[in-house]
Structure formats: structure tokens, C-alpha cells
Length: 336
Image 1: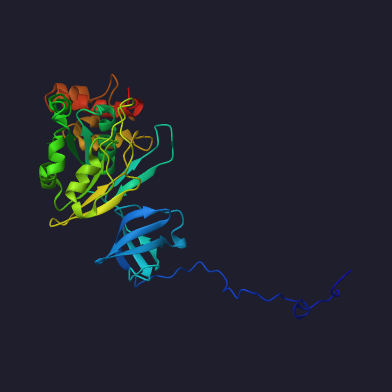
Image 2 (image 1 turned 180 degrees about the vertical axis):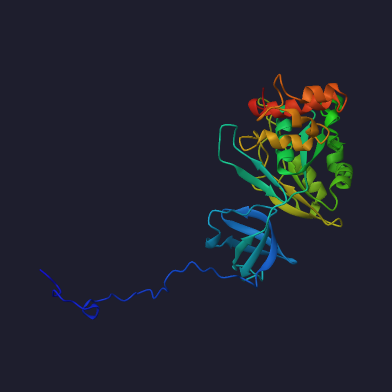
């Protein structure tokens, strides 16, 4: 049955009122010119704790940011309730340009890239010399991620009272990486923290390491007013510790202007996201030699120009060996 006649007018058509009274959608977004600047300290289930001036503010990501996620270390701009009082919530409306990123994937076959930390100056790779045994492949992977993401590496070797550091230091000697060697007693009496503090004062440093190496104990010594749950227990069967840090957290390093970012312990460090061509940027003495390389050269093939570059005395052969070892680590598992 026809509801309207043949010659209907638009006034004859009934329009249902909008019960919610919503305004029509628009592509015009607010400029948020009054947004305040802040830094993301930690992320927990969609809620971000940010430092705004001298107070911490709980915030959530604004819808207009889409899938763009903020991570620890990000510089952000916030609107809403910035008082920091209990049960208040602000909104992050902008995420600033990142100067560096520490990224990882679950494994080398996983295409999902996860940004762990943004805007850090350096990466402190904490590893025990024994109990648990050092894992050079994992160290190599962390170094590749640091070089790829624009972070300067720092080696922190713990438990030197159980094993000497000479072999491990020799393995990385050609890379000229700064390092700190500590014992178990020094982790607890503050001496280790003081030596590490000399390398991280005034800088933003992310700490990584697998469980049981003393990473969180060291962070607690560096920032005693913000102690995190720590463990000294290493499984006697697997030789690995139990994760006690479950989320990354940025902590101010008192008196230095620097920041310590404690990250969860890792058992693997996937490098699916790494472009091998960017790793060479961390080797300025070798980089000019790549001009004669064939297109898409892996720097580990018969016609690689780096062999001739080193043979002519432009760089130390140990440096080329180190580069190739790091590049090859993407094809090797940490336990290999």
C-alpha cells in the first residue's frame, strides 16, 4: 500500500527526531591550542600515567589519534583535567616526533612490531656473567635494535664474583661499547649504582635484560625512592629467572636530570622489523666502503666491497667481523 501520493512534497515525508540530539559528524578536528606538554611514564591497560610539570596525570588516548599508540618516553600533549587528583582523567591529543625508538617483535617470524620505549638516549644491556649464563646472541640482538633505533648501547655486566668478564669484553671490544662490571655485593651496597650513574646522568636510559641478571635490583639501587619488586631467584633447571617487572616504567634519576626506564625482562628479542641496511650506520669507519657494494648487498657475500675496504687498511678487520656477526644474528636464535 502506497503511503504517499504520486506527487509528494518533501514536507509530506515524516522525519524521525534524533532522540540523542547528536550534532552531525564533521571532519574538522579541534586544534587543542591550550594543550599542556607531558611525558609518558608508564602504560597500563589503556591508561597512561604522564608527567605534566611537577605532577602525575592519568590519561587516555583521544579517539582522533586512531591506532597511533603512545609508549613510555613519548612526549605528548594533553587536555582535560590535568590536576592529577584521584579519579580524574585527561586526554592525549598529540604525540610528538620521536628522536629514537626501541622496537622488538616476539620472534623473527612475527611481523607485529612493538615499540617498547621512545626518545631514549641509550640502551643499557644488563647481563650476568654467571647464574644465569650470559647469552651473547641476545646481547647481539639488543645491540642491533639499539643501532637500528638510534640509541647508544651500554653494557652492564653483573655477578663478576662468579665469573671473569674478560671473554665477553673481548667479544665486544671491537665495537668500542662503554661498559660497567659489577659484583653481587656491589649491587646491594650501592657501589654498582654509583659506577652506572656516571654513564647515565643527564640522559634517558632504557634498561633491558633477561630475568635473573639483577636488572631490577640495579634500578632499585639507582632510584631507591621508587623501589620495584625484585627477585634474586634463578630456576636451577632452566637457568633463568622469573619475570618480576611486567610493564615499562620511567623513573627520574635524582640530582642528574636523567631518567631510568626499567623494562620487563625478555626471553627473546625478535628482529623482524630491522632493516639490515640501517645497522651499518653504527659503523662510521665501514660505511664509506659500502659505496662499491652491489645493490641490496647483505655485507656478507663474495662481492661485498667491505672486504676490499678493510684490506686497504681503512678499518680494522675485527670491526667487519663484528658487523657481520650482528647482521647474521637475525637468522640465529638467541639460544643457538
